[in-house]
Structure formats: C-alpha cells, structure tokens
Image (cartoon, rainbow, N blue to C red; front, side):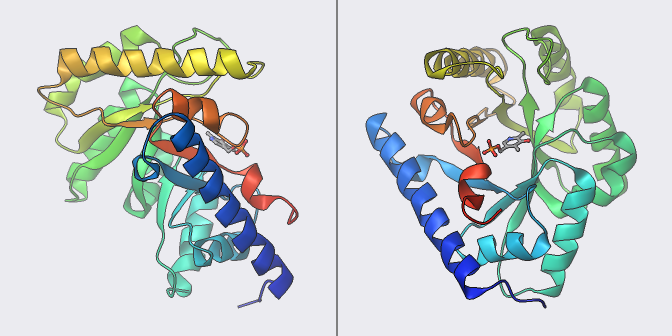
Length: 242
Ligand SMILES: *Cc1c(COP(=O)(O)O)cnc(C)c1O
C-alpha cells in the first residue's frame, strides 16, 4: 500500500477529532446527547487510501455518493482489513448497479423512488439476503433543483412497503436548499422532522422512523438542532488535505 504521509495522517486525525467536538458542541447547544448523532464521513473527494486513513483515524461510517466509487473503495478496504468501517450510499442508485452495490452497504440514505424500492426488494430476495436498511430521501420544500421524493410518492411507497420483506425503512434523508442561509436551513430540517413525526403516527405500526439523515459540513448545527441523527460530513474532514 502506498502510505499517506505522516503529516497527512496527522491532519486527518485532527480534522476527525474537531468534527467529533463540533458535533458534541452542537448536541450540547440543542440539549441532546452526542451519542444520539453519528458522523458519516463522506469520502467522495478523495481516493481509497485517504478514505482508509480516515477510517484509521476513527471514522467508522464512510459514505460515497456514486456507486462506482463506493465499489472501488470498498474493494480497497477489503484488501486492507485492519480497520473496520461500514459503507453507506448517499447518492442516487441506478437500478443496473444494485447487484454490485447492495452487498457492500449497511444503509442506503437515498431511496428516491418507488421503482428503486421495488427493485431493491427483488434483488435482496433473489440474493437470499436479509432486509436492506434504507432511508427515504424526501424533498419537503418542493424545490425542483433538489433530489428526493415528493410527499405523494412517499405515501405510495409506504403503503406498498409492508409487502417488501427485502427492505427495512428506518427514517428519512433530506438536504437543505442550495441557497438556504442558516435559519432557513433549520426551518427546512424542522419540516423534515415534522414529516417524520407524521409518518411515525400514520405508519408506526410497521416502521420505526428513528433515523434522520440531515446536515453536511455547512449546516450540521442546524440539522442537529432540528433532530438529525446522522450528519454527512465531507469537506470539513478534508481541510488542509485536498
Ligand atoms: C457531498 C455530500 C455531502 C457532504 O457535503 P460537505 O458539504 O462536503 O460536507 C453530504 N451529503 C451528500 C448527499 C453529498 O453528496
């Protein structure tokens, strides 16, 4: 393996521990316990070796937004098995990439259509695998520039979901609008939490919507204030490195 320089590894350890501190502070400000929020380290900006260094620094959940990059990195990790990390996919999953992707991930944040859910269910059953944990990616602001499902699609999917043993719905994922300032981002995240609470009331017999994947480097504080349980941090972790 090509070794990252010791200076890089050191910078990465510092960035990781700062991210952990920042999240703990945001939790304290929101009256929450740090244990309620997990940091998902987004490695899409770097190659497999640096992603591996991040895991070695203590980040045990890594995420990619493109299936192909996730395959490459998971493969690299498989050959360097002295760190343990799990992989999450946070970007769009094309149906022709299901077969290779699903066995590698412990959580799909970005379930964004009824058709994809149906295809995942079929694939998990065909593979003899247990249910895949997924989050429904929602677009509560009806922002055309944003990815994620509108409410009617979410309901349609949840009505069908009891017939999909290959899928375990665990919560929601959302992004704030691109141009949102901090107060607006917080309002948008709160809308997502309220939607979660509504869905919990309506479908709570079948599903536990316990996870809320909200917040990135620029808005994780607002997301934590609004109830996020998974913050997807990229840029902040790679400062001074890329
Ligand atoms: C890139 C990405 C992130 C991380 O964003 P940063 O601003 O770099 O922290 C989070 N979520 C998704 C879906 C992404 O694509």
